[in-house]
Amino acid sequence: MKPRVNLVCTECGYVFPSDAGRNSCEKCGGILEYVWDEEYLKSVEFTGELKFWRYKPVLPPVKRQVSLGEGGTPLQEAQRLAETLGLKHLALKDETRNPTNSFKDRSASLIVSDASGKGFGSLICATNGNHGASVAAYSAKADVACHLIVPKAMDIGKLAQMMVYNAEIVESGETIEEAIEKAKVLEREMGWYQATTELNPLSMEGLKTISYEMVEQGGDPGWLFVAMGSGVTISSLWKGFKELQSMGRVKHLPRLVGVQAEGCSPIVSAFAAGSDELKPIERGETEASAIRVSKPIFGELALRAIRESNGLAASVSDEDMLTAGREIAKLEGIFAESASAATVASLNHLIKSGVIDRADRVTCLITSSGLKTDDILQSLTKRRRSPGLGSMLTTKEKILRHISGGTTYGYEVWKAIGKGMTIGAVYQHIADLEERGLISSSVRGKRRYYEITERGKRILSAMDELQVLF
Image 1 (cartoon, rainbow, N blue to C red):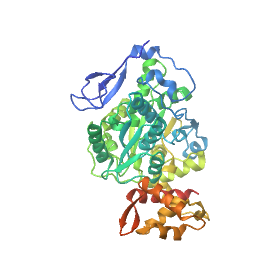
Image 2: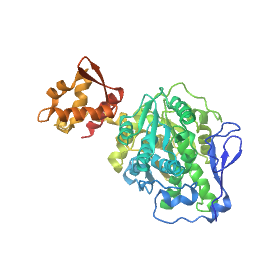
Image 3: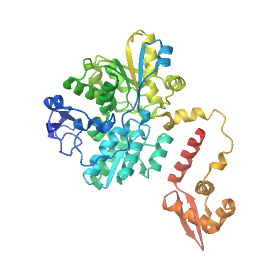
Image 4: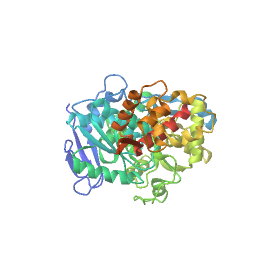
């Protein structure tokens, strides 16, 4: 049977064709969601290995598949962690095993496939971390120019990924909300493909495949704990489970628990107040940047999903997230970022308060690796560093560090770091650094002087943070 799907506004219910190429409702400005015909869903069969594109029959059609091997991540029984918490059944859906160590590889694969298949040579994406790193990787694979708009506060590990995948990065504003507004403007002005999670309905379609996998891997997740920032993840998972219910593939829907940081919890506050409307906070205060979202665009959908599932919303402190992250790593061998560890941190509180029974089946979604995040990397700096880090520095890094010390010229650089190198080789490295936008030059009299750029400073900062891992 031919796939039958429409784009439907989640606010006013207005229906658009699935190929309308719209990111929001022209009637009310609401979020658009792909809605599949129930008779079609009942006819769907999945073939191939347990990977993302196994679920092609329930994904909007694309003309070209761009894949790095995403999906098929383990649903791991966490026996040691369960014993520590006093639970009989605990599973961790480990999305750190995706190509860029993040669940966002799923939506990035679908979005970049759509952009490439439609002939776009460039895309624009506002991001506060994982999604941008994923989109940059898949854009590199597809040979699509990737333009990322990021807020000022960014995890160094995620920024390093974006840079190494050769994305063009522009800093705009203090928050992800400001970055999103900038991305909207550039989409209109430049005609670039819009790849921002909050502005592309394919995001939910990509992320819902996590639900499909969990059901094929283990059946009923029981209580399902999901960290919330914009609210898109928990909304997407619920969408997936509802579709599986329409197919007759699940007998019981999970009860959802949405988790936010105490310093940035507008969805949790609305749930506690029994309200359908969110009150955005002025500025989120949490080191878990992946869920530091003051104005969650998918917040009302997240509330709807939690309530329909007879679930809960909870918040946890940054300290509890870090503690839970260490427990997950120590007991189960999964290095989770703080936002992911928030699920286990909140589970501990809910067990102690009696909300979760120790006999209940529980599943926690681990969205991304702790290798990407500042808070965990900073905690590692308290440990002794390995000797000999200087031997790891590349020639270009040595040159960049020397130039970062102040305006200088080629001969001085060569004298400082050029032992065993010709001055011509040093000048070639300098030319490469300038071409990449890491340094700039100006002529004064008969001499050309060099100084480090803001991008160059960010590269050095990323290197400083990442070297604590060696």
